[in-house]
Length: 460
Image 1 (cartoon, rainbow, N blue to C red):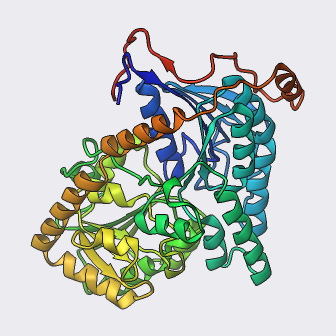
Image 2 (tube, rainbow, N blue to C red):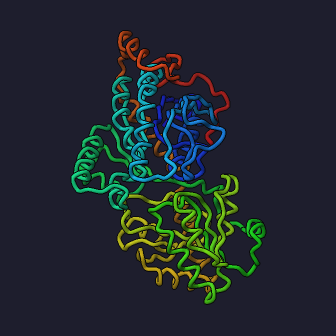
Image 3 (tube, rainbow, N blue to C red):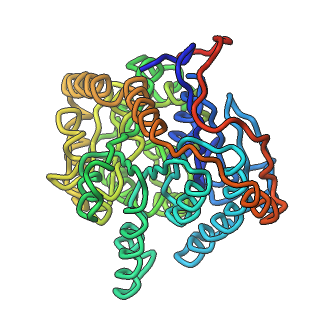
């Protein structure tokens, strides 16, 4: 594989709802992927929207009602208007996704034909961008790639966000039909790859592209500085949940466990760090339980210290979403060298990943969850051993440099297959009239270009 200096470079267009400066979830991995590839010398452009997750409010100083451009860490962005519901109900979520699909469609068509990427990668959620992604890839004679972070259609019905057997059958048929049209489809775990295969996706199109962690940044270290900021005593055993507070996590069990264990294991302190639709409900349920601390999401630069402040990581998950998602927070937990107590059914991907690095409890088994916490709270040697195994797993299976390097090789191989003919002048003229959205980007030579000199490109 040629390196970034003097080797082949591709042009990649990424299309997805979530991007920086959101601090958790899909946005962080999309940003890191784009910046890593840009640092390798590839030209990366992104069509996205405005940061709103997990608070379901547009983050200042952004405004959701207009188009805008940004250049962040080597990546060009176009942000498109979006509707963000104050209460993310089923209908509100659908309108949310539809609004982005509608506002971004003309931008994608215009940008695809002017930028003429080698590969167009769409990120799901939201799957509603898939038709536009396919159409834009065809207009640009580019290869299409869909990356599935979670199976949002099945999750929505499993969690009761959407309902109705007829609606479900129709949605799943439409999803399967759309998936089959992409040149490559990736997802984040072996069992999720198997779920794609069950939808009759040809095996040669499927790719495991798991989420990752920078093991040089997230590593075992002392957490005393962060613990002292929280006013915790040196003897406290900190059980940390950090991430989105949404319906699929089943976080109510953490409040139940804290209430039941506050007198049995008084040294155990629960720290719940994050935001989301469930945050206010959790705070209400916690009431005056004095061994729970709520924190807002911490800036990215404080994440290593936050994770290091934990003695135990908490990873609850509802049974209904088993193998429809794999929590993005798992890799940093493993890399931090702290044991995990996870709720996962036997045989699921989450259970397999945590096995040996923590204790796995059946979803909904609050008593089992409490027993696991109590066991780890009183056994520092076991915590240390499980943490060391987790760190070893992170280095072996979740290292960002290795995962992104494999992705780059696959993208380059796909880019080399890109059709070369440029769209006609008449087609470009027609697309210019689709919208006055800010899609005008100078036309560049079609296809991958070979670098003539190295201008400080870093291998990151």
